[in-house]
Length: 414
Ligand SMILES: [Zn+2]
Ligand SMILES: [Zn+2]
Image 1 (cartoon, rainbow, N blue to C red):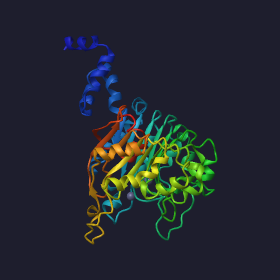
Image 2: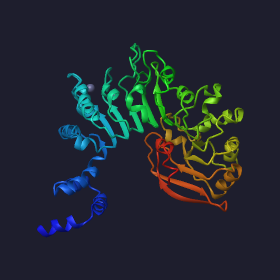
Image 3: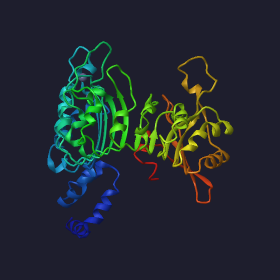
Image 4: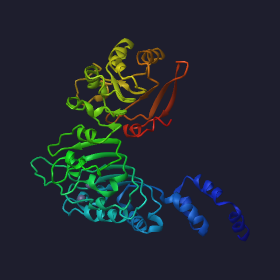
């Protein structure tokens, strides 16, 4: 034992960090923490730096509560830089488990707030709430201690309106929270009541230059009180957004042309449904686009595809496009509108098609060919076509990426 201790003490700390970094199981890293003070301080960051907290069943509640308490202690909370948390109402709310009981989501939410407020060094937060709908939840978000948060993802239906309900406006907007100061990348899937203040509009909140001064990347699935999802015109007008994920078409957005000129990457679910007429009519509007998707084709015939994508040739900087692996509009419809899979046909671009797309669009360098999951059809394979210096295209298999990952540059760094 004496010999073992002297051996590991002789190894430089950097080497230990390297060794511990190769241990894949967190429970093995946890055991190392018990060996010595030195190994404890080396191993703790591997345990707490990146956390993903969610529940698989109700029995995990006590264990999670004990983790929440640990994370209020600065020795641990100061280590956390990335947190993905799912507030699983289905496992913690007495009402969801038994309709005769009262909702207990509030108690759970308070526990989450107690530890979240202690994370001073958080740089990336994915907050996914699955609690019962209610007003007044997550008020701790307004006073988070971190001033280093760069990436903020927020998904919550707590304030989503139901038909016939009239809602009070929130006195403050989440966008005003001090932790937002350093955020460059933000994805929202929530009611617009989280964003507006007592003035009633997002524009008036964004008029304050201190709100989200550094924002350049946006994911936006925000519903109004009447349940309508709108293109984030207010954000595009007020901040130099370069990268955007918005699932639908930008209704009427081209009536305010200057607002999209900063966009370099645009991801929506089926971009050709609306982009062609806009870029034809306003060639300068999306002139800075370098990355565009998802393009779902209506035909597998080469000539038809080239014709459909021809309007994109006005985008002189377009470098990357994302093609769906499925052709939509198949006539094999069985008559059952729910048989969606029957409306899509698998599709593989040929060498010749890729070559000709490159000729048609001179700046094109990459084609990301992916299956965007529709409903319950799941595929995780994807292909990246790349144009070499000699103008030849080659392909390789790469991991599947969701829209948010593409918008955040995961494809660029491959
Ligand atoms: Zn509940
Ligand atoms: Zn919520």
